[in-house]
Image 1: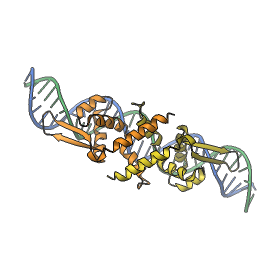
Image 2 (image 1 turned 180 degrees about the vertical axis):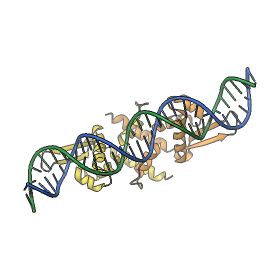
Image 3 (image 1 turned 180 degrees about the horizontal axis):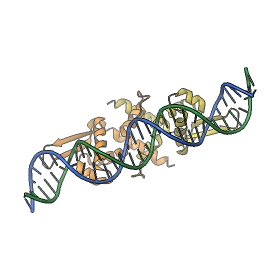
Image 4 (image 1 turned 90 degrees about the horizontal axis):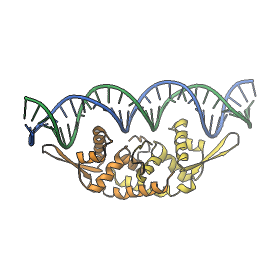
Length: 105
Length: 105
DNA sequence: TAAGTGGGTTACTTAAAGGTAAACTTCTTT
DNA sequence: AAAGAAGTTTACCTTTAAGTAACCCACTTA
C-alpha cells in the first residue's frame, strides 16, 4: 500500500488493491461464498488474527472491492461480500492465477 | 514478498513477482527498451537509490523475470532485459493496467 | 597523480505491515 | 449473577521494506 510515485498508473493501482498478506485468500473465500459472516470467514482462515483480518477487510472496503453489511442483531451480525462493481476482479484473479501457475520459479 | 501461507496459489506467486515499490516502473522501462544499461535505467528513475534499484533488479532476476548480462569492459557494462520466458508478463501488466484504470476509487 | 567512470556493497536508520494479547460492548442464555 | 456470543478496538512488540550515505574496485583520462 505504499506506491508514492507513478501514481497515475493502473498497474500500481491494481497492485495496491490486492497488496496485503491475506487479501488474496479473503477474496478467494468471498468469491466462493458470495456473502459471508465475519466469524465464518475467520474460521476459514484461523491463522490470521482478528485484528489483521479486520484491517484487511477495511482496506478492501475502502477500495470498493467488498461491501460490509451490518445488522443490528445480537449477537452482532456483519456480512461481507464482493462489491457489485468489483465482480470483474474475478477475471483479474484468474489471470494472475494462470500466470503464477505457469511461471513457477 | 512475504506470503507464508497458501503458497500453492498462482495469485500469490504473481503478486510476489511484482511486489516491490519500484518493480512496475522498472518493468515499464524494460518493456520499452528491450535492453538497457544499469546506469541508463537509473537515470530514468533517479528517485530510487542505487542500492534499492539493485535490490529490485536482483529479485526480478532471481524470479526469472529479467536477465542480467555483464560485459568485462571498463568502465563496467551491465545490461538488463526482460527474460525471454517472461515476455507474456507484458499481457499481465496490460490487464492490471486496464483494471486499475477502470477501477479508480 | 588526481579525478572520474559504472556497477556494486556495507552499515545504519526510518517507516510500515503484521503479530499477540487483552479488553470492550450489548445483548442472550444458563 | 455469571458466562458467552460476534464484532471491534487498543496497546505494544517484531519483522521487513525502503531510504541515506559512504565506500570499494578496476580501469581511463585530464
